[in-house]
Amino acid sequence: MVIKVPSPPATPPAPRLSTRTRTRSLLALCTVSALLAAVPPAAHARSADRAPKVLTIAVSQSVDSLSPFLAQRLVSTSVHRLAYEYLTNYDVKDGRTVPGFATAWSASPSKLTWTFTVRGDSRWSDGRPATAEDAAWTFNTMMSDPKAATANGAFTANFRKVTAPDPTTLVIELKKPQATMTALDVPILPKHVWEGVDDFSAFNNDERFPLVGNGPFVITDFKVDRYIRLKANKNFWRGAPKVDELLLKYYKDGDAAVAALRKGEVSFVQGLTPAQAASLKSAPDVAVNDAPGRRFFALATNPGARSRDGKTFGNGHPALLDPAVRKALFHATDRRTLVERVFRGHAVEGQGYLPPRFGPYFWRPSAAQRIDYDPAKAAALLDGAGYRKARGGKRLGKDGRPLSFRILCHATDPNDKAVGKYLQEWWGALGIGLRIDCLDNVSDPWLKGDYDLAFDGWSVSPDPDLVLSIHTCAALPATPADTGSTDNFICDRQFDELYARQSAEYDPAKRADLVKQLQSRLYDTGYMNVLAYPNAVEAYRTDQISSITTMPEAAGNIWGQDGYWSWWSAVPADGSGDGGSDDGSRTALAIGAGALAVLVAAVAGLVAVRRRATVEDRE
Image 1 (cartoon, helix red, strand yellow):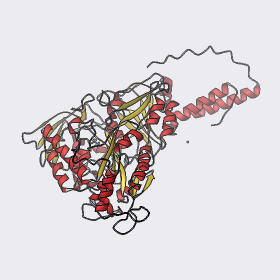
Image 2: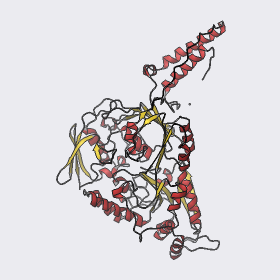
Image 3: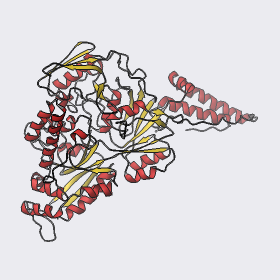
Image 4: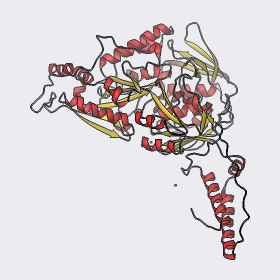
Protein backbone atom coordinates (compact mmCIF):
# COMPACT_ATOMS: atom_id res chain seq x y z
CA MET A 1 0.00 0.00 0.00
CA VAL A 2 1.48 3.34 -1.09
CA ILE A 3 0.40 6.46 0.73
CA LYS A 4 0.78 9.72 -1.14
CA VAL A 5 1.73 12.64 1.06
CA PRO A 6 0.74 16.12 -0.19
CA SER A 7 3.45 18.72 -0.63
CA PRO A 8 3.84 21.12 2.29
CA PRO A 9 2.70 24.70 1.82
CA ALA A 10 5.21 27.35 0.91
CA THR A 11 7.12 28.74 3.88
CA PRO A 12 6.12 32.33 4.72
CA PRO A 13 8.80 34.96 5.27
CA ALA A 14 10.41 34.77 8.70
CA PRO A 15 9.34 37.58 11.05
CA ARG A 16 11.86 40.00 12.45
CA LEU A 17 13.08 38.89 15.89
CA SER A 18 13.67 41.06 18.89
CA THR A 19 17.11 41.19 20.51
CA ARG A 20 15.92 39.04 23.41
CA THR A 21 14.37 36.49 21.02
CA ARG A 22 17.51 36.40 18.87
CA THR A 23 19.59 35.76 22.00
CA ARG A 24 17.32 32.90 23.13
CA SER A 25 17.41 31.42 19.63
CA LEU A 26 21.18 31.57 19.58
CA LEU A 27 21.32 29.73 22.92
CA ALA A 28 18.94 27.10 21.55
CA LEU A 29 21.05 26.64 18.43
CA CYS A 30 24.13 26.19 20.60
CA THR A 31 22.26 23.48 22.48
CA VAL A 32 21.35 21.86 19.16
CA SER A 33 24.98 21.88 18.08
CA ALA A 34 26.02 20.15 21.30
CA LEU A 35 23.27 17.57 20.97
CA LEU A 36 24.05 16.85 17.33
CA ALA A 37 27.70 16.40 18.21
CA ALA A 38 26.68 13.54 20.51
CA VAL A 39 24.89 11.69 17.70
CA PRO A 40 27.10 9.02 16.07
CA PRO A 41 27.88 9.55 12.36
CA ALA A 42 25.75 6.51 11.43
CA ALA A 43 22.67 8.16 12.93
CA HIS A 44 23.38 11.37 10.97
CA ALA A 45 23.69 9.38 7.76
CA ARG A 46 20.49 7.42 8.35
CA SER A 47 18.41 10.45 9.25
CA ALA A 48 19.78 12.28 6.23
CA ASP A 49 18.85 9.33 4.00
CA ARG A 50 15.46 8.17 5.29
CA ALA A 51 13.73 7.04 8.44
CA PRO A 52 14.26 3.34 9.10
CA LYS A 53 11.35 1.04 8.33
CA VAL A 54 10.48 -0.39 11.76
CA LEU A 55 7.67 -2.85 12.46
CA THR A 56 6.57 -3.11 16.09
CA ILE A 57 5.21 -6.45 17.31
CA ALA A 58 3.19 -6.53 20.55
CA VAL A 59 4.04 -9.57 22.69
CA SER A 60 2.47 -10.62 26.00
CA GLN A 61 5.03 -13.22 27.08
CA SER A 62 8.26 -12.80 29.01
CA VAL A 63 11.48 -14.09 27.48
CA ASP A 64 12.81 -17.07 29.47
CA SER A 65 16.28 -16.86 27.87
CA LEU A 66 18.03 -15.56 24.78
CA SER A 67 20.21 -18.69 24.87
CA PRO A 68 18.98 -21.28 22.34
CA PHE A 69 20.34 -23.95 24.70
CA LEU A 70 17.81 -22.89 27.36
CA ALA A 71 14.88 -21.12 25.72
CA GLN A 72 11.54 -22.93 25.50
CA ARG A 73 8.90 -20.20 25.49
CA LEU A 74 7.29 -19.25 22.22
CA VAL A 75 8.49 -15.67 22.16
CA SER A 76 12.11 -16.77 22.71
CA THR A 77 12.11 -19.60 20.16
CA SER A 78 10.40 -17.35 17.63
CA VAL A 79 13.17 -14.78 18.01
CA HIS A 80 15.83 -17.49 17.66
CA ARG A 81 14.26 -18.67 14.40
CA LEU A 82 14.81 -15.16 13.10
CA ALA A 83 18.35 -14.75 14.45
CA TYR A 84 19.97 -18.16 13.76
CA GLU A 85 19.82 -20.59 10.86
CA TYR A 86 18.74 -24.23 11.30
CA LEU A 87 20.06 -27.04 9.08
CA THR A 88 16.71 -27.20 7.30
CA ASN A 89 13.50 -25.23 7.12
CA TYR A 90 9.85 -25.91 6.25
CA ASP A 91 8.35 -24.96 2.91
CA VAL A 92 5.89 -22.11 3.23
CA LYS A 93 3.37 -23.85 0.95
CA ASP A 94 3.16 -27.41 2.28
CA GLY A 95 5.58 -27.76 5.22
CA ARG A 96 7.95 -30.12 3.42
CA THR A 97 11.67 -29.94 4.25
CA VAL A 98 13.62 -27.33 2.32
CA PRO A 99 17.25 -26.14 2.55
CA GLY A 100 18.36 -23.89 5.36
CA PHE A 101 21.94 -23.77 6.63
CA ALA A 102 22.35 -27.06 4.71
CA THR A 103 21.73 -27.15 0.98
CA ALA A 104 21.59 -30.96 0.60
CA TRP A 105 21.63 -34.13 2.71
CA SER A 106 21.89 -37.89 2.24
CA ALA A 107 21.78 -41.01 4.42
CA SER A 108 23.81 -44.20 4.28
CA PRO A 109 21.93 -47.43 3.41
CA SER A 110 21.78 -48.26 7.13
CA LYS A 111 20.35 -44.78 7.89
CA LEU A 112 22.97 -44.52 10.63
CA THR A 113 25.18 -41.92 8.93
CA TRP A 114 23.83 -38.64 7.58
CA THR A 115 25.90 -36.23 5.53
CA PHE A 116 24.82 -32.61 5.16
CA THR A 117 26.27 -30.15 2.66
CA VAL A 118 26.52 -26.80 4.43
CA ARG A 119 26.13 -23.71 2.29
CA GLY A 120 29.23 -21.68 1.58
CA ASP A 121 27.46 -18.30 1.36
CA SER A 122 26.37 -17.88 4.97
CA ARG A 123 28.29 -15.51 7.23
CA TRP A 124 27.92 -14.58 10.86
CA SER A 125 26.81 -11.03 11.50
CA ASP A 126 30.34 -10.16 12.69
CA GLY A 127 31.68 -11.06 9.24
CA ARG A 128 33.13 -14.49 10.04
CA PRO A 129 32.16 -17.41 7.75
CA ALA A 130 29.45 -19.71 9.14
CA THR A 131 30.65 -23.27 8.52
CA ALA A 132 29.98 -26.94 9.22
CA GLU A 133 32.34 -26.63 12.19
CA ASP A 134 29.83 -24.32 13.88
CA ALA A 135 27.08 -26.91 13.43
CA ALA A 136 29.33 -29.73 14.71
CA TRP A 137 30.26 -27.64 17.77
CA THR A 138 26.60 -26.88 18.49
CA PHE A 139 25.55 -30.54 18.39
CA ASN A 140 28.63 -31.83 20.22
CA THR A 141 28.06 -29.31 23.01
CA MET A 142 24.49 -30.51 23.44
CA MET A 143 25.72 -34.13 23.47
CA SER A 144 28.50 -33.59 26.01
CA ASP A 145 26.98 -31.03 28.39
CA PRO A 146 23.50 -31.70 29.84
CA LYS A 147 23.23 -27.99 30.68
CA ALA A 148 23.27 -27.25 26.94
CA ALA A 149 20.57 -29.85 26.21
CA THR A 150 17.77 -28.29 28.26
CA ALA A 151 15.70 -27.02 25.34
CA ASN A 152 16.53 -29.29 22.39
CA GLY A 153 18.36 -32.28 23.85
CA ALA A 154 15.81 -34.74 22.42
CA PHE A 155 17.18 -34.09 18.94
CA THR A 156 20.74 -35.17 19.81
CA ALA A 157 20.08 -37.90 22.42
CA ASN A 158 20.51 -40.53 19.67
CA PHE A 159 23.66 -38.99 18.15
CA ARG A 160 26.82 -41.08 18.42
CA LYS A 161 29.31 -38.73 16.78
CA VAL A 162 29.28 -35.43 14.87
CA THR A 163 32.20 -34.21 12.75
CA ALA A 164 32.97 -31.53 10.19
CA PRO A 165 35.66 -32.91 7.84
CA ASP A 166 35.64 -29.63 5.93
CA PRO A 167 33.86 -26.26 6.08
CA THR A 168 30.90 -27.39 3.96
CA THR A 169 30.49 -31.01 5.14
CA LEU A 170 28.73 -32.12 8.33
CA VAL A 171 28.59 -35.82 9.23
CA ILE A 172 26.24 -37.12 11.92
CA GLU A 173 26.53 -40.74 13.09
CA LEU A 174 23.54 -42.21 14.92
CA LYS A 175 23.11 -45.00 17.46
CA LYS A 176 19.94 -46.12 15.67
CA PRO A 177 17.82 -44.74 12.81
CA GLN A 178 16.16 -41.38 13.54
CA ALA A 179 13.22 -40.08 11.54
CA THR A 180 13.76 -36.42 12.46
CA MET A 181 17.09 -35.97 10.67
CA THR A 182 15.58 -33.56 8.15
CA ALA A 183 13.65 -31.72 10.89
CA LEU A 184 16.34 -30.87 13.46
CA ASP A 185 14.86 -27.68 14.88
CA VAL A 186 18.11 -26.62 16.55
CA PRO A 187 19.60 -23.13 16.09
CA ILE A 188 23.21 -23.36 14.85
CA LEU A 189 25.48 -21.18 17.00
CA PRO A 190 28.82 -19.49 16.22
CA LYS A 191 31.59 -21.57 17.81
CA HIS A 192 33.99 -18.64 18.08
CA VAL A 193 31.50 -16.74 20.26
CA TRP A 194 30.10 -19.53 22.43
CA GLU A 195 33.10 -21.81 23.06
CA GLY A 196 34.26 -19.55 25.89
CA VAL A 197 31.07 -20.04 27.95
CA ASP A 198 31.78 -21.88 31.21
CA ASP A 199 28.27 -22.64 32.44
CA PHE A 200 25.53 -22.94 29.82
CA SER A 201 22.82 -23.14 32.49
CA ALA A 202 23.74 -19.66 33.74
CA PHE A 203 24.51 -17.93 30.44
CA ASN A 204 21.45 -16.20 29.00
CA ASN A 205 23.16 -14.68 25.96
CA ASP A 206 22.23 -11.15 26.99
CA GLU A 207 25.50 -9.65 28.12
CA ARG A 208 26.74 -8.03 24.91
CA PHE A 209 24.82 -6.70 21.92
CA PRO A 210 24.48 -7.08 19.04
CA LEU A 211 24.32 -10.87 19.32
CA VAL A 212 26.22 -12.73 16.61
CA GLY A 213 23.87 -14.73 14.37
CA ASN A 214 23.38 -15.68 10.73
CA GLY A 215 19.59 -15.50 10.35
CA PRO A 216 17.55 -12.83 8.57
CA PHE A 217 17.71 -10.56 11.64
CA VAL A 218 20.30 -9.67 14.29
CA ILE A 219 19.32 -9.16 17.94
CA THR A 220 20.64 -5.72 18.82
CA ASP A 221 19.06 -4.91 22.19
CA PHE A 222 16.92 -6.43 24.95
CA LYS A 223 15.33 -5.23 28.16
CA VAL A 224 13.49 -7.73 30.36
CA ASP A 225 9.71 -7.35 30.05
CA ARG A 226 10.13 -4.27 27.91
CA TYR A 227 11.38 -5.04 24.42
CA ILE A 228 13.64 -6.98 22.05
CA ARG A 229 15.07 -5.15 19.07
CA LEU A 230 16.25 -6.89 15.90
CA LYS A 231 17.96 -5.32 12.93
CA ALA A 232 17.76 -6.67 9.39
CA ASN A 233 20.78 -8.75 8.35
CA LYS A 234 21.67 -7.10 5.07
CA ASN A 235 24.05 -9.99 4.23
CA PHE A 236 21.55 -12.81 4.81
CA TRP A 237 22.09 -15.50 2.15
CA ARG A 238 18.40 -15.71 1.22
CA GLY A 239 18.31 -11.95 0.76
CA ALA A 240 17.87 -9.12 3.21
CA PRO A 241 14.46 -8.57 4.83
CA LYS A 242 12.49 -5.67 3.43
CA VAL A 243 12.12 -3.99 6.81
CA ASP A 244 15.04 -2.39 8.60
CA GLU A 245 14.12 -3.39 12.13
CA LEU A 246 11.67 -5.40 14.22
CA LEU A 247 10.76 -4.19 17.71
CA LEU A 248 9.05 -6.77 19.94
CA LYS A 249 7.38 -4.71 22.62
CA TYR A 250 6.03 -6.27 25.83
CA TYR A 251 2.43 -5.63 26.85
CA LYS A 252 1.16 -7.29 30.01
CA ASP A 253 -2.38 -6.19 29.19
CA GLY A 254 -3.91 -7.39 25.91
CA ASP A 255 -6.37 -4.51 25.72
CA ALA A 256 -3.47 -2.06 25.98
CA ALA A 257 -1.79 -3.79 23.03
CA VAL A 258 -4.99 -3.55 20.98
CA ALA A 259 -5.31 0.14 21.85
CA ALA A 260 -1.72 0.67 20.71
CA LEU A 261 -2.55 -1.05 17.41
CA ARG A 262 -5.52 1.22 16.89
CA LYS A 263 -3.35 4.28 17.44
CA GLY A 264 -0.62 3.01 15.13
CA GLU A 265 1.89 2.64 17.96
CA VAL A 266 2.36 -1.05 17.10
CA SER A 267 2.21 -2.79 13.74
CA PHE A 268 1.03 -6.26 14.80
CA VAL A 269 -0.81 -7.94 17.69
CA GLN A 270 -1.29 -11.69 18.19
CA GLY A 271 -3.35 -13.82 20.58
CA LEU A 272 -6.49 -11.72 20.23
CA THR A 273 -9.61 -12.61 22.16
CA PRO A 274 -12.83 -13.00 20.11
CA ALA A 275 -14.09 -9.65 21.43
CA GLN A 276 -10.87 -7.89 20.51
CA ALA A 277 -10.87 -9.42 17.03
CA ALA A 278 -14.49 -8.40 16.46
CA SER A 279 -13.79 -4.83 17.53
CA LEU A 280 -10.85 -4.55 15.14
CA LYS A 281 -12.64 -5.78 12.03
CA SER A 282 -14.15 -2.36 11.47
CA ALA A 283 -11.09 -0.38 12.59
CA PRO A 284 -9.48 1.71 9.84
CA ASP A 285 -6.14 0.52 8.43
CA VAL A 286 -6.34 -2.77 10.36
CA ALA A 287 -6.54 -6.31 8.92
CA VAL A 288 -7.53 -9.33 11.08
CA ASN A 289 -6.07 -12.77 10.35
CA ASP A 290 -8.15 -15.66 11.75
CA ALA A 291 -6.71 -19.03 10.72
CA PRO A 292 -6.54 -22.64 11.97
CA GLY A 293 -3.94 -22.65 14.73
CA ARG A 294 -0.88 -24.76 15.37
CA ARG A 295 -1.41 -24.77 19.14
CA PHE A 296 -3.40 -26.78 21.62
CA PHE A 297 -4.90 -25.51 24.86
CA ALA A 298 -4.93 -28.16 27.59
CA LEU A 299 -5.64 -28.93 31.21
CA ALA A 300 -2.60 -30.64 32.73
CA THR A 301 -2.49 -32.48 36.05
CA ASN A 302 0.55 -32.88 38.27
CA PRO A 303 1.38 -36.62 38.16
CA GLY A 304 3.84 -36.22 41.02
CA ALA A 305 6.95 -34.20 40.24
CA ARG A 306 10.09 -36.34 40.13
CA SER A 307 13.59 -36.39 38.70
CA ARG A 308 15.50 -39.09 36.85
CA ASP A 309 17.47 -39.96 40.00
CA GLY A 310 14.20 -41.20 41.55
CA LYS A 311 13.60 -38.32 43.94
CA THR A 312 10.16 -36.76 44.30
CA PHE A 313 9.48 -33.12 45.06
CA GLY A 314 6.77 -30.52 44.96
CA ASN A 315 3.42 -30.39 46.69
CA GLY A 316 0.99 -31.68 44.08
CA HIS A 317 -2.30 -33.01 45.47
CA PRO A 318 -2.06 -36.81 46.06
CA ALA A 319 -5.67 -37.34 44.93
CA LEU A 320 -4.61 -36.54 41.35
CA LEU A 321 -2.42 -39.65 41.38
CA ASP A 322 -5.70 -41.60 41.29
CA PRO A 323 -6.80 -42.22 37.64
CA ALA A 324 -10.44 -42.19 38.73
CA VAL A 325 -10.12 -38.61 40.03
CA ARG A 326 -8.45 -37.37 36.86
CA LYS A 327 -11.07 -39.05 34.67
CA ALA A 328 -13.87 -37.64 36.81
CA LEU A 329 -12.52 -34.09 36.42
CA PHE A 330 -12.37 -34.49 32.67
CA HIS A 331 -15.92 -35.93 32.54
CA ALA A 332 -16.96 -32.77 34.40
CA THR A 333 -15.37 -30.46 31.80
CA ASP A 334 -17.53 -29.38 28.88
CA ARG A 335 -15.11 -28.73 26.01
CA ARG A 336 -17.85 -27.79 23.56
CA THR A 337 -19.15 -25.06 25.83
CA LEU A 338 -15.63 -23.67 26.23
CA VAL A 339 -15.21 -23.47 22.44
CA GLU A 340 -18.57 -21.74 22.04
CA ARG A 341 -18.50 -19.36 25.01
CA VAL A 342 -14.83 -18.66 25.76
CA PHE A 343 -13.36 -18.87 22.27
CA ARG A 344 -16.63 -17.79 20.60
CA GLY A 345 -16.10 -20.33 17.82
CA HIS A 346 -12.53 -19.24 17.11
CA ALA A 347 -11.29 -22.73 18.05
CA VAL A 348 -11.94 -26.42 17.43
CA GLU A 349 -12.94 -28.77 20.25
CA GLY A 350 -9.91 -30.63 21.62
CA GLN A 351 -9.40 -34.34 21.08
CA GLY A 352 -5.86 -35.63 20.50
CA TYR A 353 -2.60 -33.95 21.34
CA LEU A 354 -1.86 -32.58 17.85
CA PRO A 355 -4.11 -30.02 16.13
CA PRO A 356 -6.15 -30.98 13.04
CA ARG A 357 -3.95 -28.66 10.98
CA PHE A 358 -1.38 -31.47 10.98
CA GLY A 359 -3.61 -33.88 9.09
CA PRO A 360 -1.45 -37.03 8.87
CA TYR A 361 -0.88 -36.99 12.63
CA PHE A 362 -4.31 -35.80 13.80
CA TRP A 363 -5.97 -38.38 16.09
CA ARG A 364 -9.48 -38.78 17.49
CA PRO A 365 -10.40 -41.10 20.39
CA SER A 366 -12.80 -43.91 19.58
CA ALA A 367 -16.39 -43.64 20.77
CA ALA A 368 -15.70 -46.12 23.59
CA GLN A 369 -12.52 -44.29 24.57
CA ARG A 370 -13.77 -40.73 24.44
CA ILE A 371 -14.20 -38.89 27.77
CA ASP A 372 -17.29 -36.80 27.06
CA TYR A 373 -18.96 -34.27 29.30
CA ASP A 374 -20.98 -36.40 31.73
CA PRO A 375 -21.30 -34.97 35.28
CA ALA A 376 -23.28 -38.01 36.49
CA LYS A 377 -20.52 -40.35 35.38
CA ALA A 378 -17.95 -38.07 37.03
CA ALA A 379 -19.83 -38.25 40.33
CA ALA A 380 -20.16 -42.05 40.07
CA LEU A 381 -16.42 -42.40 39.47
CA LEU A 382 -15.63 -40.34 42.57
CA ASP A 383 -18.16 -42.25 44.68
CA GLY A 384 -16.73 -45.57 43.51
CA ALA A 385 -13.18 -44.48 44.30
CA GLY A 386 -14.12 -43.51 47.87
CA TYR A 387 -14.38 -39.72 47.49
CA ARG A 388 -17.89 -39.30 48.88
CA LYS A 389 -19.84 -36.16 49.66
CA ALA A 390 -20.22 -35.04 53.26
CA ARG A 391 -22.90 -32.80 54.73
CA GLY A 392 -23.02 -29.52 52.92
CA GLY A 393 -22.18 -31.15 49.60
CA LYS A 394 -18.39 -31.01 49.89
CA ARG A 395 -16.56 -34.09 48.69
CA LEU A 396 -13.92 -35.50 51.02
CA GLY A 397 -10.46 -36.79 50.21
CA LYS A 398 -8.90 -39.95 51.64
CA ASP A 399 -7.55 -37.84 54.51
CA GLY A 400 -11.06 -36.76 55.49
CA ARG A 401 -10.53 -33.18 54.40
CA PRO A 402 -12.60 -31.39 51.74
CA LEU A 403 -11.27 -32.12 48.27
CA SER A 404 -9.91 -28.94 46.76
CA PHE A 405 -7.33 -28.22 44.06
CA ARG A 406 -5.20 -25.33 42.79
CA ILE A 407 -4.79 -24.51 39.13
CA LEU A 408 -1.95 -22.42 37.70
CA CYS A 409 -3.22 -19.65 35.46
CA HIS A 410 -1.30 -17.21 33.27
CA ALA A 411 -2.24 -13.72 34.42
CA THR A 412 -1.78 -12.34 30.91
CA ASP A 413 -4.09 -14.90 29.25
CA PRO A 414 -7.81 -14.05 29.54
CA ASN A 415 -8.72 -17.55 28.26
CA ASP A 416 -7.12 -19.12 31.35
CA LYS A 417 -9.20 -16.98 33.65
CA ALA A 418 -12.44 -17.53 31.75
CA VAL A 419 -11.99 -21.31 31.56
CA GLY A 420 -11.07 -21.36 35.26
CA LYS A 421 -14.41 -19.79 36.15
CA TYR A 422 -16.28 -22.53 34.28
CA LEU A 423 -14.21 -25.23 35.98
CA GLN A 424 -15.02 -23.75 39.37
CA GLU A 425 -18.73 -24.02 38.56
CA TRP A 426 -18.65 -27.53 37.03
CA TRP A 427 -16.31 -29.07 39.60
CA GLY A 428 -18.06 -27.24 42.40
CA ALA A 429 -21.24 -29.09 41.45
CA LEU A 430 -19.29 -32.30 42.16
CA GLY A 431 -18.35 -30.97 45.57
CA ILE A 432 -14.74 -30.17 44.59
CA GLY A 433 -13.18 -26.80 45.32
CA LEU A 434 -10.86 -25.01 42.87
CA ARG A 435 -8.56 -22.08 43.55
CA ILE A 436 -7.34 -20.23 40.46
CA ASP A 437 -3.78 -18.97 40.92
CA CYS A 438 -3.19 -16.40 38.17
CA LEU A 439 0.47 -15.40 38.17
CA ASP A 440 2.70 -13.26 35.99
CA ASN A 441 5.35 -15.98 36.24
CA VAL A 442 4.03 -19.55 36.49
CA SER A 443 7.47 -20.99 35.73
CA ASP A 444 8.78 -21.05 39.30
CA PRO A 445 5.97 -23.06 40.93
CA TRP A 446 5.64 -25.29 37.85
CA LEU A 447 9.33 -26.23 37.79
CA LYS A 448 9.22 -26.88 41.55
CA GLY A 449 6.17 -29.12 41.17
CA ASP A 450 4.20 -26.78 43.41
CA TYR A 451 0.86 -27.06 41.61
CA ASP A 452 -2.10 -29.43 41.26
CA LEU A 453 -3.31 -28.55 37.78
CA ALA A 454 -2.25 -26.02 35.17
CA PHE A 455 -3.37 -24.53 31.89
CA ASP A 456 -0.90 -25.81 29.33
CA GLY A 457 -0.24 -25.19 25.66
CA TRP A 458 2.39 -25.80 23.02
CA SER A 459 2.90 -24.74 19.45
CA VAL A 460 3.48 -27.72 17.15
CA SER A 461 5.99 -27.85 14.29
CA PRO A 462 5.28 -29.81 11.10
CA ASP A 463 7.29 -32.65 12.64
CA PRO A 464 5.72 -33.54 16.03
CA ASP A 465 8.75 -35.25 17.59
CA LEU A 466 9.69 -32.43 19.96
CA VAL A 467 6.26 -31.93 21.53
CA LEU A 468 6.02 -35.70 22.04
CA SER A 469 9.50 -35.94 23.55
CA ILE A 470 8.59 -33.62 26.44
CA HIS A 471 6.44 -36.41 27.92
CA THR A 472 9.19 -39.04 27.95
CA CYS A 473 11.04 -40.18 31.07
CA ALA A 474 14.28 -38.84 29.53
CA ALA A 475 12.83 -35.33 29.67
CA LEU A 476 12.64 -35.35 33.48
CA PRO A 477 15.24 -33.24 35.26
CA ALA A 478 18.36 -35.17 36.25
CA THR A 479 17.94 -34.04 39.87
CA PRO A 480 15.36 -31.86 41.64
CA ALA A 481 17.78 -28.95 41.30
CA ASP A 482 17.85 -29.22 37.50
CA THR A 483 15.27 -28.10 34.96
CA GLY A 484 15.05 -30.79 32.30
CA SER A 485 12.80 -30.44 29.26
CA THR A 486 9.70 -32.11 30.70
CA ASP A 487 6.33 -30.47 30.36
CA ASN A 488 4.60 -31.71 33.51
CA PHE A 489 6.70 -34.63 34.83
CA ILE A 490 4.94 -37.43 32.91
CA CYS A 491 6.97 -40.66 32.81
CA ASP A 492 5.13 -43.64 31.32
CA ARG A 493 7.08 -46.66 30.04
CA GLN A 494 4.46 -47.59 27.42
CA PHE A 495 4.58 -44.05 26.04
CA ASP A 496 8.38 -44.22 25.96
CA GLU A 497 8.34 -47.45 23.97
CA LEU A 498 5.98 -45.99 21.38
CA TYR A 499 8.02 -42.80 21.21
CA ALA A 500 11.24 -44.74 20.50
CA ARG A 501 9.49 -46.70 17.71
CA GLN A 502 8.12 -43.60 15.94
CA SER A 503 11.46 -41.85 16.21
CA ALA A 504 13.15 -44.69 14.27
CA GLU A 505 10.38 -45.18 11.67
CA TYR A 506 11.11 -43.69 8.24
CA ASP A 507 7.94 -44.88 6.51
CA PRO A 508 5.59 -41.85 6.73
CA ALA A 509 2.37 -43.85 7.04
CA LYS A 510 3.76 -46.24 9.66
CA ARG A 511 5.23 -43.35 11.63
CA ALA A 512 1.95 -41.45 11.52
CA ASP A 513 0.18 -44.51 12.95
CA LEU A 514 2.69 -44.71 15.81
CA VAL A 515 2.24 -40.98 16.53
CA LYS A 516 -1.50 -41.58 16.80
CA GLN A 517 -0.87 -44.49 19.20
CA LEU A 518 1.23 -42.12 21.30
CA GLN A 519 -1.63 -39.67 21.51
CA SER A 520 -4.02 -42.47 22.41
CA ARG A 521 -1.78 -43.55 25.27
CA LEU A 522 -1.40 -39.99 26.54
CA TYR A 523 -5.17 -39.58 26.42
CA ASP A 524 -5.76 -42.81 28.36
CA THR A 525 -3.35 -41.94 31.17
CA GLY A 526 -5.54 -38.90 31.92
CA TYR A 527 -2.64 -36.61 32.72
CA MET A 528 -3.67 -34.14 30.04
CA ASN A 529 -7.02 -33.07 28.68
CA VAL A 530 -6.76 -31.10 25.43
CA LEU A 531 -9.64 -28.67 25.67
CA ALA A 532 -9.35 -26.84 22.36
CA TYR A 533 -7.23 -25.96 19.36
CA PRO A 534 -7.46 -22.15 19.29
CA ASN A 535 -7.33 -20.32 16.01
CA ALA A 536 -4.43 -17.99 15.29
CA VAL A 537 -6.23 -14.67 15.69
CA GLU A 538 -3.97 -11.75 14.85
CA ALA A 539 -4.18 -8.25 13.46
CA TYR A 540 -1.83 -5.81 11.75
CA ARG A 541 -1.76 -2.26 10.46
CA THR A 542 -2.19 -2.14 6.70
CA ASP A 543 -0.70 1.36 6.64
CA GLN A 544 2.51 -0.08 8.14
CA ILE A 545 2.57 -3.56 6.52
CA SER A 546 1.52 -3.66 2.89
CA SER A 547 1.97 -7.45 2.53
CA ILE A 548 3.06 -10.38 4.70
CA THR A 549 3.23 -14.17 4.17
CA THR A 550 1.44 -16.59 6.47
CA MET A 551 2.64 -20.11 7.28
CA PRO A 552 1.28 -22.06 5.56
CA GLU A 553 0.78 -19.63 2.77
CA ALA A 554 -2.90 -20.59 2.46
CA ALA A 555 -4.87 -19.97 5.68
CA GLY A 556 -1.88 -19.87 8.01
CA ASN A 557 -0.58 -17.83 10.93
CA ILE A 558 1.90 -14.97 11.11
CA TRP A 559 3.25 -15.21 14.66
CA GLY A 560 5.26 -18.18 16.00
CA GLN A 561 8.36 -20.17 15.20
CA ASP A 562 7.29 -20.49 11.59
CA GLY A 563 6.89 -16.71 11.54
CA TYR A 564 10.37 -16.78 10.00
CA TRP A 565 8.72 -16.54 6.59
CA SER A 566 6.31 -13.83 7.69
CA TRP A 567 8.83 -11.33 8.99
CA TRP A 568 11.48 -12.08 6.38
CA SER A 569 8.89 -11.45 3.67
CA ALA A 570 7.02 -8.54 5.26
CA VAL A 571 6.82 -5.50 3.00
CA PRO A 572 6.53 -2.22 4.90
CA ALA A 573 4.00 0.30 3.69
CA ASP A 574 5.30 3.72 2.73
CA GLY A 575 3.75 5.15 5.87
CA SER A 576 5.57 2.80 8.25
CA GLY A 577 8.31 4.26 10.35
CA ASP A 578 9.93 4.15 13.76
CA GLY A 579 6.78 3.01 15.56
CA GLY A 580 7.21 2.13 19.20
CA SER A 581 10.84 3.22 19.43
CA ASP A 582 10.23 5.36 22.50
CA ASP A 583 11.85 2.82 24.86
CA GLY A 584 15.00 4.78 25.46
CA SER A 585 16.98 2.01 23.73
CA ARG A 586 17.42 3.97 20.54
CA THR A 587 19.72 6.49 22.22
CA ALA A 588 21.32 8.10 19.19
CA LEU A 589 18.06 8.67 17.35
CA ALA A 590 16.33 9.91 20.49
CA ILE A 591 19.03 12.53 20.93
CA GLY A 592 18.78 13.48 17.29
CA ALA A 593 15.02 13.89 17.53
CA GLY A 594 15.36 15.97 20.69
CA ALA A 595 17.89 18.20 18.98
CA LEU A 596 15.58 18.74 16.04
CA ALA A 597 12.75 19.70 18.40
CA VAL A 598 14.97 22.32 20.02
CA LEU A 599 15.95 23.68 16.62
CA VAL A 600 12.32 24.12 15.61
CA ALA A 601 11.59 25.79 18.92
CA ALA A 602 14.47 28.17 18.40
CA VAL A 603 13.28 29.27 14.99
CA ALA A 604 9.83 29.91 16.46
CA GLY A 605 11.36 31.83 19.33
CA LEU A 606 10.41 29.17 21.92
CA VAL A 607 12.91 27.25 24.05
CA ALA A 608 11.75 23.89 25.57
CA VAL A 609 13.55 21.34 27.79
CA ARG A 610 12.62 17.83 27.50
CA ARG A 611 12.65 6.86 29.96
CA ARG A 612 12.27 -12.55 32.64
CA ALA A 613 10.17 -21.95 31.53
CA THR A 614 9.59 -24.19 30.39
CA VAL A 615 5.96 -23.41 30.98
CA GLU A 616 4.36 -20.18 29.87
CA ASP A 617 2.90 -20.54 26.40
CA ARG A 618 5.42 -23.29 25.72
CA GLU A 619 6.86 -24.00 22.28
